[in-house]
Length: 453
Image (cartoon, rainbow, N blue to C red):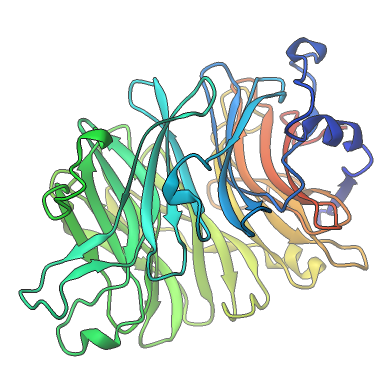
C-alpha cells in the first residue's frame, strides 16, 4: 500500500506570508526563477477562503476569495492577481459597490470574457437573508476595478398578486454566450401551486441575461432576462454547482439533488439548449448511491467525457466519514458512466477522510499524460487530525498512479483549486489556517510529480 507523506509548509512560508499580506510592499517578479517550485501566501489575515482560481495567458493567476470585513463584521468578495512566479500584482475588496456594503456576500465563480478583455465574477449578496440576490461583476484585469455590475432576483409570475414578486436568488456560475450571460444559481420558489407560502427549499435556477449589464433597465425586471428556467422539487433542495461548455459548444450544468425516497444527496448532470435553457431530451441523469451522500464540487471536460469530483459522506449534516470521489460520464450519453470511485483504503488512514475540490487533466509533458490530478482536503495522519491540502494522480478509471502528496500548516487547510501547466508542473490554490484567526490564501507550485522538495 502506498504511504501518505506530509510536508509542513508553515516554516517554509513565513517570510512569504509577511510579504504577501496586502498593503505591504509589491513583490519583485524577477527575484524568482520561474521554473522553481514555490509556496506563496496572500490576504489580510482576516479569514480568507479561496473559492475559485483561473490561469491567464501570461501564466499568472486570478484568485477569487471571500474575506471578513472587520469594519462591518461581514463577508466580502476578495480578488487577487499574481504573475507567473506567484507574486502578487494587485488585490481588491469590492466595497465601492453599494450592494456589497451590507450583509454577507459570498463569491462563487470567476471567468474570463470570450474576448479575454475583462473578467467576470458571480456570487450572492446578502446571503441567507430575505434580500438575497445574484450578483455579476465585470472587472478590469489591470487592477480589478469594477467595469459594470448587475444585481438581480428571480421574478415570479403567477397571475396572483399574493404570490408574485421577487424571490430569494443565488448566483453560482456564469458562462458568456455571445451577447448574453448564462447564469446558474438557485431560487427559493415553488413549482407546484399547492402551498407556495410554505416553501423553504431551493430549486435550481438557470438564467440568461444580456451581457451589456449597464443597459439593463432597473425598473423593468420582468423584461430584462432572455429566460428563466427553474428545475427541482418543492419538497427538497436542488442546488446548482457548475456550468460547463465543451469544445463542441455543448452546454451542461452540474448540481446537487435531494432524493425524496432515499433521503440522500446525489449528483445531477444535464445538457441544455443555451438559447432556451430547456434541458435536452434524455439529457439529464442522476448519479449516487443509496448508502451515502455524493456531493459534487467541480466538473471538467476531457474529450468525450465529463469528469466530476466531490465528497462522499454518510451524513451530510455533520460531514460524517467523508471520502473524496471521482465520477466519469460520457457527455454524449450521460447514462454511460463508470462507477463512482472513492479511495477508502487511503482515507481510513485519516480516520475521517476528506473531500475532492477540483480536478485537472495532465498535459502532454506530465508524468502520465491524459490522467488526472485531484486536489482537496484530507485528515492528517498525525495525532491532531487537522485537515490538510492533498493532491493525487489518478488514471481515467480512478486507479491511483501516485501517493497522496499532503501539505499542511498547524491548522485546517484545503486544496481548493488546481491547474496544470504545459510543462507538467502543478499549481494548487489553497486555504491555509495558521491559527489565531489568521486564515489566508496560498498558491503552491510543485514539479510534475506533485512535489516541492
